[in-house]
Image (tube, rainbow, N blue to C red; front, top):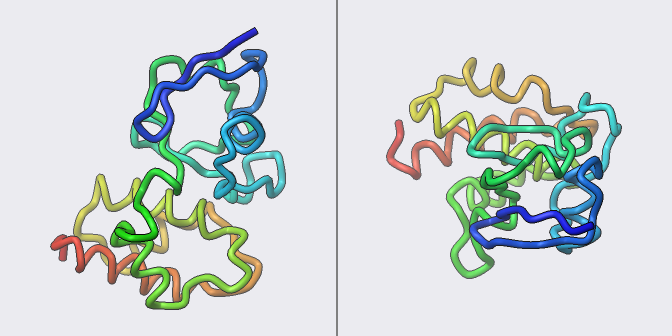
Length: 155
C-alpha cells in the first residue's frame, strides 16, 4: 500500500501501511534522518517533527493520520549554505554535545518561536520542558533559542 504525504514542501508517496509510525517513514523511506528514535513512547522528544507547525512525536504518530498536513523536519528548516537562524544559533552556542536530542529540540523551539516570537528564558524552558537531553546542554540550548529569536528580529 502507498501512503501520500507532504514533507518539507514536497509531495511524497511511500510504500507503507497507514499505521506505520511517521518516524519510520521519514527515516527509512525518505532518508530524513534528523529525527531520532529515542524511547518509542513519546516521552523524550528526540523524534519531534512539526505537523502543520505543531510539534508532534513522530514515533507514535501513524503516517496515515497525517493526511494532507505539512510535515516539517529539521532538514526542511535550512540548508548547509543557508542555515535557519535556529540552526545557526545552535552551532554558534555549541548547543549539541552528542546531538541525539538536538533535532527534536530545534523543532520544538521552532514551534515555540512561531507562536511566541518574544520568549523569555522561562518561556523557552517551558517550551522545551518535554524534550530530554542526557548530555546536560540545556543552558546552551536555551541561549541558542534566545539568540535565534533575537537574530530573527523577534526580541
